[in-house]
Image 1 (cartoon, rainbow, N blue to C red):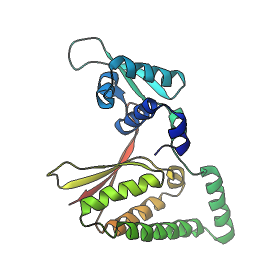
Image 2: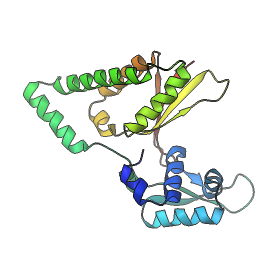
Image 3: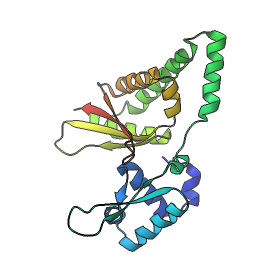
Image 4: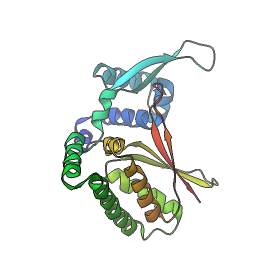
Length: 217
């Protein structure tokens, strides 16, 4: 989720604030304080501190009921640096060199092989799962260990599981090699033993984008 060093350096309250804002696309202070089980003024002060450092953006939104607009915070672009990523520029240059040396399809062949190996690793780690819901929850934990920011969402009685992905360290690789997205999805399906439907939510400026993987029970 976060780069490990930040768990040591950041205040626990800041980590909680950043986490909730990451997974929610932004929150009003009243809702954020409820989720963090803390007072309104304490949470507001943490948000103001992070805003001054450039990690949050502060706006106001109308209340659903009569009253003054609420203070609303969301992550800024600077906050992206808090989440793990591979050195994309170096990796993209390496893939381009491979393309020049071995042909146009060489980079995608390498990415295909990478996800085949990932598939086998995931299968082995999920092999003891007795239900699809258990596997999905375990898979989310595995992906967090691989530096993704992801949550497994499921309400009792619902027929669908959602793996909601807020951050992926390979994002820039996927932008340059979009076929790799399908490679990863096929590896996920093979590891989980079921079809997975991928849906992208675009960043609108008012809410951050995320990717949902829908799994039918």
